[in-house]
Length: 433
Image (tube, rainbow, N blue to C red; front, side, top):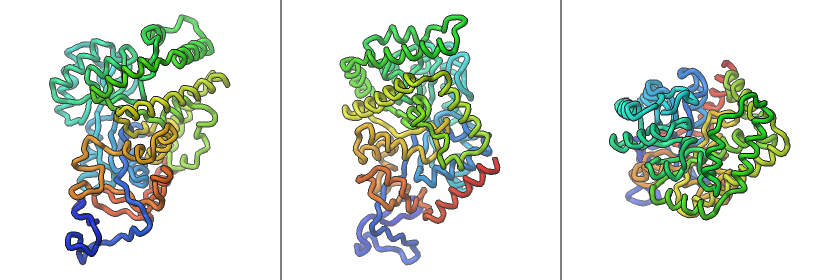
């Protein structure tokens, strides 16, 4: 294979007249190794971990060192993301190709910042037009949107030629979100609820404010009962109907399994409090992670942890069921949420997909940006030269994606020595911050 100016220009044996190696070429001997397309993390936050000028100094090296060559940033300040993309494009900074959504569109008050609060049709139209003018690739919706504003965003996105992605708001069904045109659902939000034979009742309970004076223990008990009822009311018939809607509407899924297993459904066994990779995480972010982990463990008992294990298992089963009927499942992590390591988390996501029942090949295909198949995501002439050279066969063991010998990032070769230097740079940044 020959790469020239960030593109694959020839593939074949070196003896072929079509693949004659130029005399000035840098040659990589891949004998006994395995070449895969660069990996894609379809859900992370490049600027959510620290101040915009700092987060890039440890997140980007960790992504590249782990063979992540394209990312979809799912919530951040447009001006900083555009600046970062420009620096990478001009070769001033080493990093993956970036697609981004910009600020969240959410209800009042919003869950996270940066957000644009949407209360009515005018807010929705103005926000979509603003973000389109600023050059975002997608619109991101969040959980606190009310039905009227949510469907107004859907209309505005359609009228302005924009795709919208994100959470299924708590107030509507995943089926309704799919019918409205939501292009991808993140974290399986609303999916299990939409598979329940008691969906309307459970949604009403979910939205009902806690009774005044309830203790933390009582709130925990309410949540436990709700989750148990959610699991016990799973309806294969409703699931099949929902999945057919997802297929008909081309509604993709980004489950972000590392987030679910290591945080949302955290148990003592899935906690990463003593993980050696914490050496790459800056001190301020570590403190934020510790707060997130503490909140996830607060007022939890052994029955709670057993219930979380069942929810995690049901989530894995959902991923398998949806994939098997033809729904597009995309790899994503939600780094840098607590316990979700940039770069490394993508390999965990692939491993969890295989645990769910996907083959290693199917898991690898989930880590490609399939919407740009004519430009990237394969090893073919004319494709963008984002590649990862492995020491082990990932089709035999998906964990072999971690055995990286070299990364080709937009045509630039980074051998193992250079990848190790990136890791060292991230570690030094973490120590200093």
